[in-house]
Image (cartoon, rainbow over all chains, first blue to last red; front, side, top):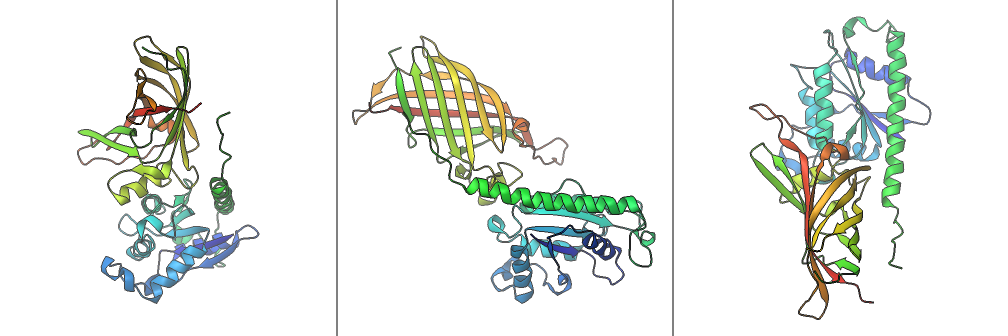
Length: 196
Length: 177
């Protein structure tokens, strides 16, 4: 089972990066995870450039095709997801009908220094993923006051929060497994009843 | 009304199967299915109907809309490729009126609806086959089928209505004995 993980924040001391790393340490067995770190290298989305998008875009697409599911940590900039994250999703959403995110489960989490923990951004991100045709989990995680939430080792101080994150990762894994089962079922030819 | 006892198969070319729903609060949006199959079995004044259509055969005029309808926000065709409509016990009146309960299945959900309509007396077509005309329609709350998508309108309210009318104007051909 393959998961592509990314954080929507570019800065080095991002709490979303810490949140993502915390989640990765809580990953269940048997999951292959790759962290995508090329958000800054993507050109701005331009429909005129789709055919000649360049290696950064094709590398991102290739990773999205590789993945069975996604894990995204998003900050909230001005009430929504950061432009760099949305830009990556805009590239990944093309061509619309056959984009590599279609049907894939996604876990959305967020962190912010404010009291709502990137709640609007995580809601927006789930709505964006649904519009793209992915399967975002209804459940997510928001971390308020994130600048005070981690200890010196980068561990989330709140033990209950850590337990919740571990459970959410299990849910993502379950959703991916369920997806694979359902797809196999849908592709199996059904015996056709013939008139007696 | 003449005797229509027997088994009848839908003529996919000369029939239409579709749906209608209030959209933007000011009108009705209609779509249909390009591909479907259906069998009607009649004995005395009772009939059973069994029909299905691939979700991917939904016919709308915009490719992005079709993609949206097939996505998990609507039919979720990747997981649930087939839409089924079955009615075990339709009553046929002497005047050709039809009514009865049907079950519509899609997206792993099922909903009951009342179908009403008409069945014609049999007639021969230009190629010597016997056919009947069937008009049926019924209305269902799409939320019972897991079709919950909506979008807020600028002036308030939601874009998509809850009740969907499903209907068919169909011709069925008598199965060769």
